[in-house]
Image 1 (cartoon, rainbow, N blue to C red):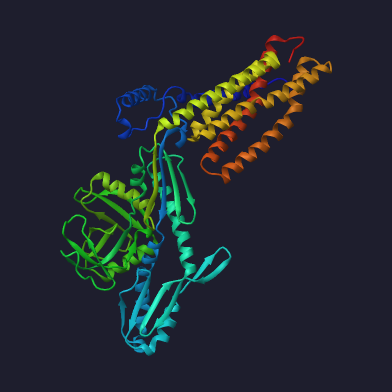
Image 2: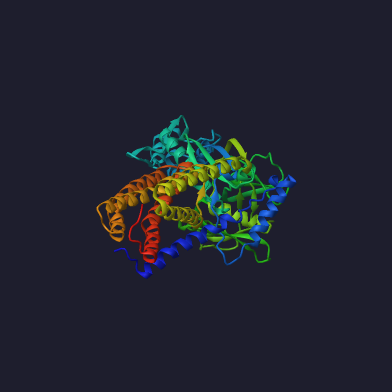
Length: 553
């Protein structure tokens, strides 16, 4: 039927109005990223102030979400980091020593006394006093080996154990090192993503390059050094037993121990057991808070495993000091006053409110498993993207004008109706981009330009079908109705296949490819809506008012 029910008319115009309403802020003001280096020149200061004034004048009751600009348009920071995967080998060996020690102790009657020996960071060397007991020592330590889970199933063991005279040597297997390298890079990727998300930056590009490198591109960050401050802090939190305290940084801590400086007490150094009781990896939450004296602090909570180990240690060591170590500095060394069974506690120190908040953010995001070495860093100024924005605007305007002229010349009044729908289509695209907080990149602009060309395809199909029906001497109303009915299947088939392609590009691609896929996919949805509903509603409204005896398409 050519007629539209009232509720359908209201719904169609309401959707159009909502899209334009959401897109409106993009036409009046721009999001401002204020950075010290960007404010060096007076002309930039003036421009920034003007943009801030525009945003301040925008009514609170109006939508304020804007389309985010990508790195190529907005400027930002680019980093290429190498993950020092070898760091994890040393920490694995340190964490394994208490387990090896506890396994060998019941065998003292056979192997004699056991002593940890100085060794390479990537291995553990243990001396036994009865070399004839070495076969038994090797047997019990090999029982600690765990099979490595791989994509093809269960692979080799994670450790290799061998004996040399009276020295038992434990190292990581080559298969475990490869698996550990992959886990370390994957974990670093996820933690970097969490840290950037914590500070509210949208649409970063964080992807793996090669076996041990990570590419990081973040729009809107003022400088590469600012980005490094966000992601470069290791934030390794450990809880370690205290052996002693002194002022000599070069004292011999003994095998299996380390000397760590105090953060708040210059010249004070703590001797700690190298193997931690609990690490920050077992934290499930950390929040900024205040201690009982009103000073900034951080509340923390462990997972089930961490809570059990923390509770057992505090139960067995009441009255002993316990160091809280952050990035190889003792931030606090309280004496255990009582059993702490709940797995939660508080970190105190000479923090400011900002420092406690930042520490909580880093601890929530998780500790980087290994150090990052930044091989390449670039700060991309927004002025570099202005040329791209201007070129994109020109391309869009030229394409838009060419399509409008073509439709007007080819289809007359009906072409004018299609042009109105095309304008609404562009507004709906920007409204949806603003609503979902999408990032517009240069390929995204290309997607919009492509959408402008594709948007009239559906109208062309409909108008050509109407022309064919008019040639069969059908009346105007019947020709319009059949034109839409017969063109519908072709419109849906063509756009569904293109939409599937956009979805695959978004799922499989990254960075600029996803930017193109987003604008293309949204453009297809809005184009189909405006072609099937909006243009038809305009034509029906015109026909109901004019009731022409004949029409020309």
